[in-house]
Image (tube, rainbow over the protein chains, first blue to last red):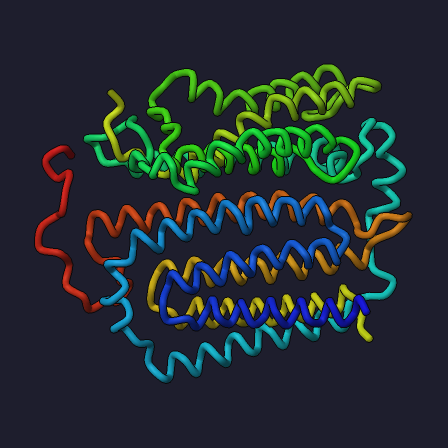
Length: 312
Length: 116
């Protein structure tokens, strides 16, 4: 039974992926991509990666989808000119050849994976107790592979700096995006009033249980960012000017705490990002608490985009 | 019947091919970004299938690659956001977002020339 469902899911995903690639209208392709992103979360559940499913739903389907819908709407007037361009037949054939070979090579790799599969699960299980975490992923993210997580938090921040640095001079340091207006009695404004309290609770809950069950700061932060963006899109809230000092302090707060705790580890435990015995859990909690608001704000502002209005 | 890891691993292999094809063939930059995301999804699902095969001790998957996947998805989103923003700014300044080499450049820089 579950095999049949899985096969159906795989077929549906491939069909939506084909649609996303070949649809003539960009907006239609984006809508297909969003549906496809949502179905991918089911794949993650089937692959027993519930934490990954949560992040795929929140970021892969949700935030990326919202970003692409906005981009497709804004680029609509360039559609006609772009449609006139056609790749040469030779290019198409070469593309089919390249894509087909890549797929075939990967398929062969999938079918000849070593058995038994190499795994780090036993090592993770042996050492997880030292971190005090019940969710092995949180243990990996913040103890065994904390360096990755630190660099990731900084990459997110760098991407935001990249987005802001594209602002034209006249609105430098201004408010991102247009000021949205929606019918105050419309469905958007209604949902923007009803959903954020629920979404906020869900986001904080997913963040809170991340230590022991699927969830964590990235998933929680994405949901909270989405709730704020909903209020902005309905015109109930406005993005702050990006030159505000409080905003910039809030953005760097998480990474700074992470680096500070990591640096303290050099003298206290002998290595950068090492935790002294018995203090791992409170320190990991401190990093998560500091990182979550910074991440939520950074993700939301990444989506809000380039400053378009003067600060005033 | 094949197990979930093999099935979705093969599905991921096709996704990478589809994305690669779209990335080469679609002339519009936004479609290229979407196609690149499809390639990325394929890579992630393949990695997820490998992680699932490494499951042991009651865990359905190897937690180390799964944690790397979370990092990967967030970084992929950031890169896409930066690429889309660059594209929107290009559309604003140049009135056209074509990548074709033989299109003449716009005669006048659209805005902000006096501010610069």
